[in-house]
Image (tube, rainbow, N blue to C red; front, side):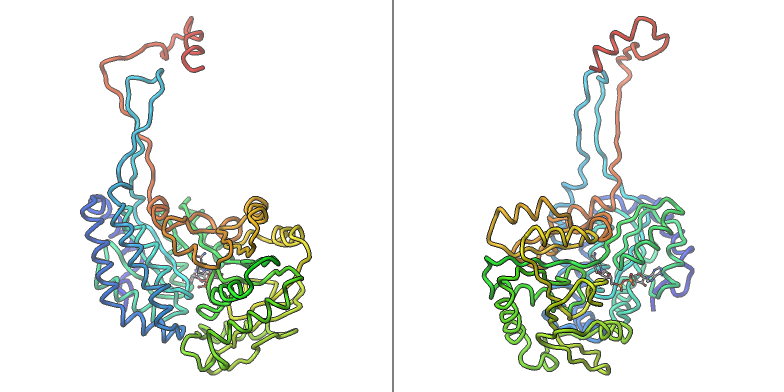
Length: 459
Ligand code: NAD
């Protein structure tokens, strides 16, 4: 049980405020020590977390290591650069304001709230926490109740690693989340759906609390005719069916050049067979749907020209990897983010049409473009907008710590990972320092006769 089950969130917040005010979280030594403790705790908790992820999502250990427990790599990266990130940066002072020095001083925000989703429940609460700690904040973490075993494992890990007045975990569902959101935090970091993102932003507005919103949406995968079809198919199938399609940056649908569609469909089917065998249900490498509610939701989207898949088993919350061809924009699977193992395929004739299709919809979290033409890659880069963009690849941009990760428009607000996480949880304070020894009187009233000097000095 989490520390907070026994005390109110308001109490906990007030204790964290006191602890933050003590100044202890600010020193580099403290931050490094806490990050090291967290890294060690994650290493020790590995078996527990793997089991929890298997229970909640049937997540294969390989996927759990590479996509969730790999947060220890983010900690190592942060430890390596933290000293440099924390250094105040001097900036130049223009002549009229001399003598003076000016610097940008990174200061922690205070007490922050991190609300996580269920699909990568461990990584998506721990990675923001790394940023919050690195930047010198206290934090309350609320993992998703939809992945209950992982939520429990996260709460236990945090309880055992940190004092509650510094970092605390609160377990619970919507009510707990709303209770937390009614409090005054210094920053709210939310990962979840676009719909709840709006609820979070509205609650934050009451306290004028800044937010980072890591949201979702439909991430298109555009495939041109001049690609290596087998490699393209493998990369799409991998990105789509990882975690049974429950990935915020999974290719949501394929938009393929009509000329290459038959070949691509054949290659997609072959890749599925290579990865998961003839019966994906029997494969230890294919996950399950997180809950009955999501199983029901996804089941309603299956229909039309099935190229492969379509089978399901409610008791096991299994939905086979499914590819649907000849999909129109009116198909049920094209209305909202799919977030499951269903891959609709739509076609286009010209790249102009594909670009227009993407641009007619909300800005996606990720856009994938498979093409051998640098000219067309440049067109996509310049003529579309998305949180992230990969050429001839899916998903892996998220793993590159130096690339800011976040959405744009409906897919999110703000970003994190690596230095960007530090920035997200930091206030960059502008500091100007002047000595007493020279006090140029030109700025003081009376102004008579001084305007010509002001014009000269300030340009
Ligand atoms: P969700 O929005 O339903 O829930 C996220 C969190 O919000 C949970 O902790 C939940 O308890 C809380 N919550 C739910 N309803 C609430 C309410 N009414 N008021 C306050 N809090 C509430 O999202 P989810 O189903 O856990 O995750 C799936 C969504 O998250 C997808 O849209 C996916 O694309 C998105 N996602 C985005 C990223 C990203 O990095 N951008 C990563 C993973 C998931």
